Length: 282
Image 1 (cartoon, rainbow, N blue to C red):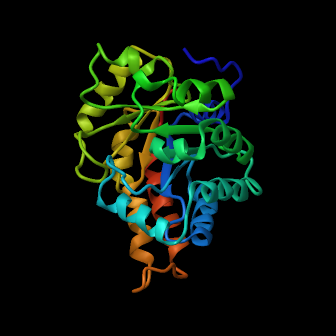
Image 2: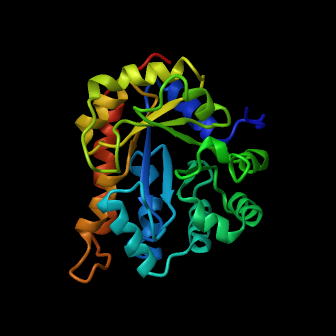
Image 3: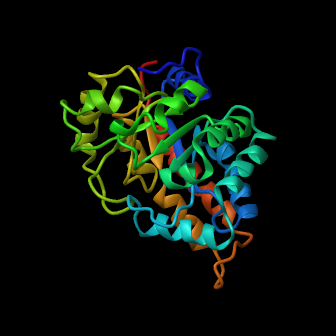
């Protein structure tokens, strides 16, 4: 089990949202998309638009679990010179004006391995990172990053999917902390719409194995889909739709425009309104 004892920013935020009688809104954007400066402006605007937690994608050249939209966002970021070190700097710059909103880095192990696990954990903590989602490290590899991250004080958030059965769940959850990210479809991001009627049952099944909040992602595109998922989950995750809002705001050369921040903020505000339409027992 997790070695963490004191509540993290992620723990505190989920507790606060629960006390408000609603689900949390978790927003994903790619760090450095379409360039580092515009990306920072987008991230700074997310909390005021209604985001409760922020996932930042770590750009990587081989994002095997991501659909075309997030792959393209990662490539835009990489072409703009984004690196893992610059991603951590983005977090530092965000933290200069926001000490409360949880930041989770999401991506793949290779850039962290190249950076050096110990150095990465040290620098991530110093920058103000709260948690990690590393999609290509199964529980069998927990010694590589998960356990050191937990020991350092970072939450390590694991994915569960429709194919994660009751026999597998205990292994998936053993060293998970912060929350559980339930992927509501099988396959890559942005590829399908989930069966919203099955989400609540899937969340209830996971909750039989853990007291952690369960956030549900993949397939959230607007207020209505966010509302449908909020009825059965502790958190609603939106990513592809926000990444597409960035893409749709760019000029013919793929550069940020005056509309970029507003396009993302407006969509987050709409989705946040959908999440907040669902009253939950505190």
